[in-house]
Length: 191
Image (tube, rainbow, N blue to C red):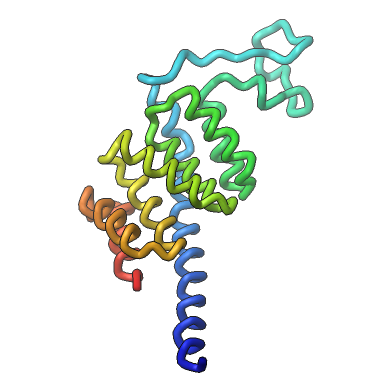
């Protein structure tokens, strides 16, 4: 019994520290990269906006937050911005809903699969997270960020083999950039 405790107590401390480190790394990425979705217009329909009832002019300055409804948003760039804002504010349920909406608009965007995957993991829906991350990998196997996230989620779930495979792929795409360095560091910390 004492031998088991000597193993599990440090392992638990390591997992918590590891999880907080990865959260910090990935959170910073999402904050810095919140505008990148709007650059991918090849697979999105043209942005449009449906104004709430009672507004006939097309001046966004006339709208205030009390009249604005998420259901009226149709611009992928605005949905992405709001989803990232919810994610940054740890409002993961709201962020997940918006990322799902983005996938309906642009089903071939691996970054959205990545964002949705990590968000689902943070709200405790890790099996859904893995499914979405694997769908994103299938769409764009060269997306380094999604491999990093897939490795992180697998490591958090104790699937060391899958975590190692995903992180190795992330590091092999480009070991010199921030994502590759994070993957290499995470690999070194795997049991």
